Length: 124
Image 1 (cartoon, rainbow, N blue to C red):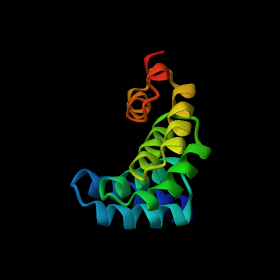
Image 2: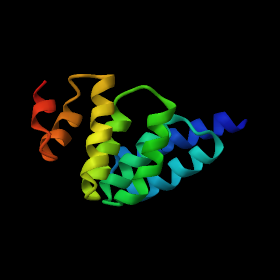
Image 3: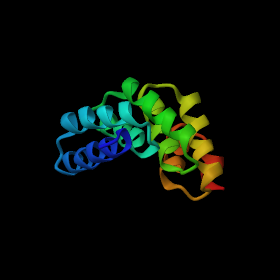
Image 4: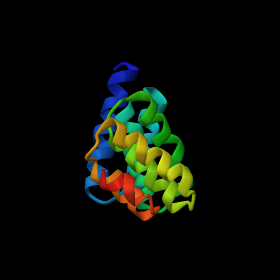
């Protein structure tokens, strides 16, 4: 089995653990998967698990990497939430705006803007 195949196997196992609510085991499996092949979805879900466990600072790096590796909207939305929970309203707004530039109706990003009192942009 090559590195990519093993990374995919670990990713699938991590998703199963995540779905079962075992975030700690899912984090370990996602980290192993990423060490073999840094796929954006593994990084995004790793960050999401860390957010679920309120490990906000640790969630920033994988979510930032996922944001850079893919043009989808979910990773920057989660990154905005991480910064909001860390109390960095400016960074939270920055990544919420990035998410909205990718998908103007993305609800998660609009919520962050509302929570950071950037009401006018959330209503656009």
